[in-house]
Image 1 (tube, rainbow, N blue to C red):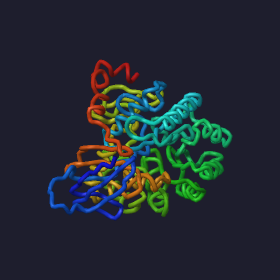
Image 2: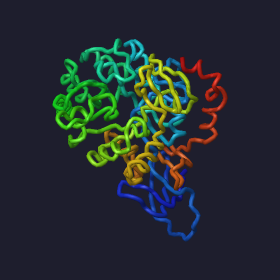
Image 3: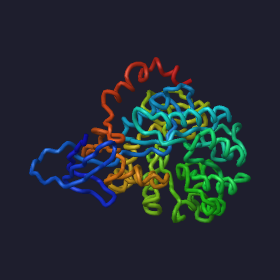
Image 4: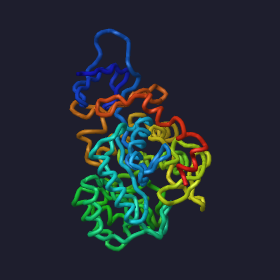
Length: 399
């Protein structure tokens, strides 16, 4: 049965359309038409594509690495509560058996489906990094790049391994990039001490872009532009940004927008503390502390975030003066293009999946639909009820 949504403003790839009615049926957008009946009533103020979080470790007290079979479903609902219609479950450096188990769980989750945001697959962040700029990754667990091992992990993932992050200065990096790219896996570069030329060589070999640009890599220097400089000037490199006001200064957000524009990918890099009280948590096996919503390691380094993707969109508008349509595209169309799924997700167009997000003019979430199914607000609120959000439960969830 067809459903219709009357919007005061609706965002397409061509820009905003005023007073539009979107029709969807069977999970697919079937029509977008001007409202001409003279009735001033509108169901929603702003109708935009549901967001895509391409780099998220956890939230609502759960982590992608958790062995709990309900962790991914909980994260799926938490993401939907934040305006996200699809996400990549992101791992962290851990012993190889734990990574293998996580890949298998994610593959099962993709196959069986999720109750909220769609699980697109896995983003393998670690263990192929170097000690410099390691962030909250345990360098004792770093591994060398080996194509046989990568092939084994791909087989475990059963087609759900979408992104692998690595440090391009590691031995066998270029061969590994060739192998992964040839198999349809995106390679992102980060947690690395690579210089400009090494980064450029990796991008030329088929790497797709940079993991959370500026964080976990050499900074921009006028004589050695480093990984950041390479990413900013490379014509096709995608740049992840954690726009939470802590990882990147507003002027850096503006710089990235000026240089990279449509190549920017807003991500949360959120971990299990997102939506939870301050306290100690685990990021994989790494103990971190959240104070005032900012998560740090025991040495003071940032360790993921508690950002929401809709919050990142607001921050790009408010802190970096990015037009709203561009900021939304950084969190929807851009990740869809990077992952090669823009024919299905990322924008509102006839024939695409009905992943829809209704916002107020203040950019607060009103409704979300995933494949045409509205995620009930009562289902979302129940996720955060009871022990998940009280201080007494915190230690059992975190340590």
